[in-house]
Image (cartoon, rainbow, N blue to C red; front, side, top):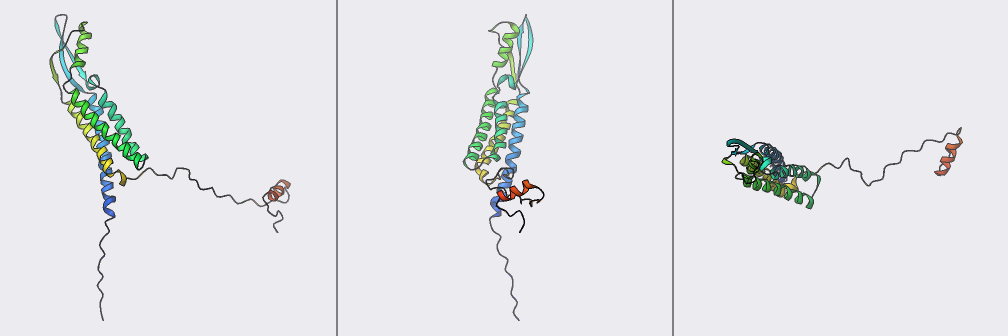
Length: 213
């Protein structure tokens, strides 16, 4: 009696793209949302500080990130919206939105790094405090928050690059709530009541025999 040994078939490689799509999707969502939150939080912190001479004395001044530049916060909000919109479009539209997401991240990084050494916001505050347009701050120092905002922008940029590379493997919004073009099934006509003349006439209009024969 011969015994036949079952040889296991190799597993198809179709699961690899789906696994890569799930991992890239999770990483893009995490990095995009975290990056936008970090960038928005950083713009509300103190980026620079210094002193201005007012009435013969030193007056301390501070500037938040939003005082220095509003670009990182604006781009972080746009990037967050683009991250959500990636799942509402397909094919070329998804690539365009993914490119916008990446550009928002790159712009956030650039704006944050440019603002890391900017002292114009404090100079404007010094001019208002001293009542002299030529007044400037001295003992100017900067904090690390601009670089935190740049790190948030880098996370948004990563989400955009992942969307560009793996976006075609990601699912789109469900279309079960969308109206389809298929005609709705007609409800079965109610049998004509011989005691109601209007039912008899309706049955005749439909081409039916109201007597049920």
